[in-house]
Image 1 (tube, helix red, strand yellow):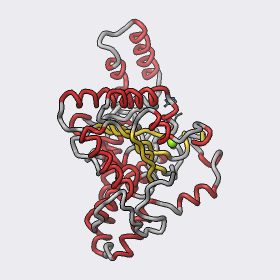
Image 2 (cartoon, protein in one colour):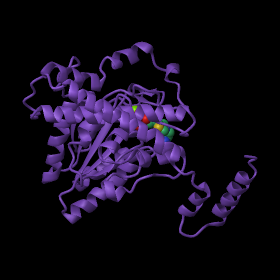
Image 3 (cartoon, protein in one colour):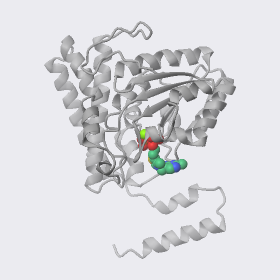
Image 4 (cartoon, helix red, strand yellow):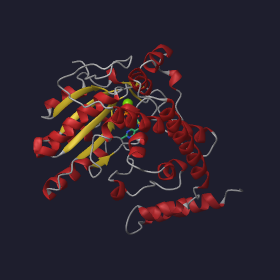
Length: 351
Ligand SMILES: Cc1ncc(C[n+]2csc(CCOP(=O)(O)OP(=O)(O)O)c2C)c(N)n1
Ligand SMILES: [Mg+2]
């Protein structure tokens, strides 16, 4: 099965009657601006980690179209359950750079209020957010509020038992949930092809979900498919899955050296399919990228970069000892021992 594509790798529009989308200059410019902002933020965060300001960073580089195309197809009150690399989607929802960086600076386990943004906190335990999303969707179903739930996860996470339980449970309950998998070809150093024999969208159909394969580096295709699928779920059509074929252009994290397991030619072939360059080619060809708009986006990105550097350095270093108080309502003897051990360790530091 070929992934749905509306924009070929050279940025030429491909007519696709199955997935109608009104392609206007406004829509394309808006998606472009959101993707450019996301990439600039990601670049800054990477640099901040290399400068010692962040403990760790997981880049979203190359996955902007998959995230922006999908999140903008949801309504603002649809609840999103992300995994840990959805910075482009988070920024697009209005989460601030400071709120996004808190966790990676090691200050708190999350920086934003999920109820305010309708965007759940990041989940680092692979696939744990998927049963949570289904449970939330079952609540939404009972409330009859007209919201839907969207859950992001990776190809590697789809191997977890929880992912498969969530797909089955969602189908059995007819829950209004959209599973959005960014298949970026790698789970750290494990390539997708050795994790599964049947592609995820086929597996999802086996569970009884409606499932689609989309070119995840084509923001228009992702937007068109997600818009249609979201409305189908909202209309009571039951859960669905979208598998977006994309590529992680960076390492898994700043602790990873992808040069040890993937080839330069693979990276080159995906760099040539860069999702932002592809949309830029369309904008340029159509005459929708005039000098003024380009300058506006550049200056907005410069401002975002400046803000990112400033707020990161200003984030107060919290007392990590407080984390022990957030585990259980009543402290167990083991937790008390661990808390004292942590305090002793900190007080043993010379500086
Ligand atoms: C339950 C669990 N097992 C293992 C890990 C370690 N781990 C962190 S990320 C990762 C790979 C995940 O790959 P994928 O789901 O494809 O997401 P990607 O990082 O490619 O976006 C692994 C194995 C973890 N966080 N949680
Ligand atoms: Mg992956």
